[in-house]
Image 1 (cartoon, one colour):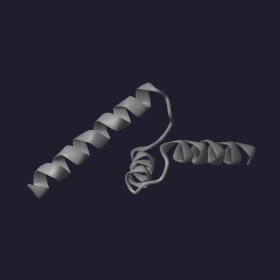
Image 2: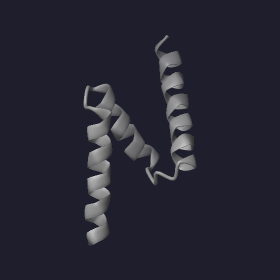
Image 3: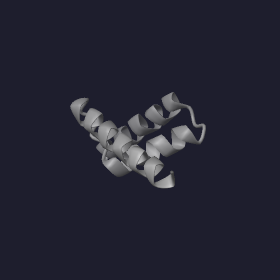
Length: 62
């Protein structure tokens, strides 16, 4: 049962990454995984998106 959940989770991340690439988000699998983990732990999805956006702006200034 645990193996099936792991496989399903991995497949979900592959699909999410493919979708992310189609939308040109520029997020890596690791970055997507971190965002998903934050959202699953209760962090507001819009707040996660705002943080990612702010981090990109800050990185672009350097």
